[in-house]
Image (cartoon, rainbow, N blue to C red; front, side, top):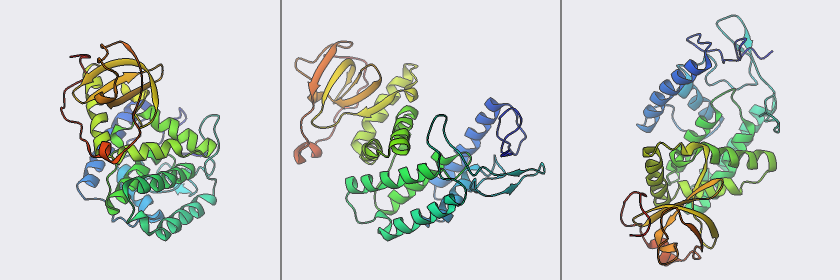
Length: 304
């Protein structure tokens, strides 16, 4: 018995809420407030180690859970007289995360390795992104907390990037994309999806393109969080349906994915909205890398 939850499965919380939907709403609101504090420079002092990770979790969830900042291998005395602990944890039909005593030792190794690489400082953006993706996957496979691992990890990596002279924007990562990358990394040891993700969210131009596309989809009442959404990559062949062209960007979809790319990569004449398109993006060059995206129109049209 882990004692982290009430009989109906809702996590025990400071307000004693047993309705999971009400708890979810309260948690989202209170954590959002704590996130704002972090973005404004408040919260724990960054030390980029296990202590920092625990402090971040405590800061984010202190208004919701008594066990905020405590890893699941610990025995936490709760106000209802029970002791909460959860040494073993896994996703449904998935591989187990770190178990019991392996949690603090894995966090210590994580901290030592990160410090040994000078906190990933003095690296170019893409090298930083690739290395950060590996560390993010390691944290994800440890999964040290009963709840709130993803949000804590993202804030940790955001601070790490800032300290190394880079910027990460996780806001443009859909829930489905994060889930797919997490499964690939934890279940199969394949971090390529995370590397691609980190390269995109550290690239201001790609972040801007995703933000524009997501803003348009939201305005149309479309929930993009449950779809894999990414920008196109150089030297790749794409096949799908054009959603629309917005100035220097376009958006398309195939059966499962939403993709955002540069209008100049589309075939000529420009296809109509809703038309099937097949094309290959050019290989990456320094000249291409220097070009901006230009106009900031929405995606409500095709040729024009």
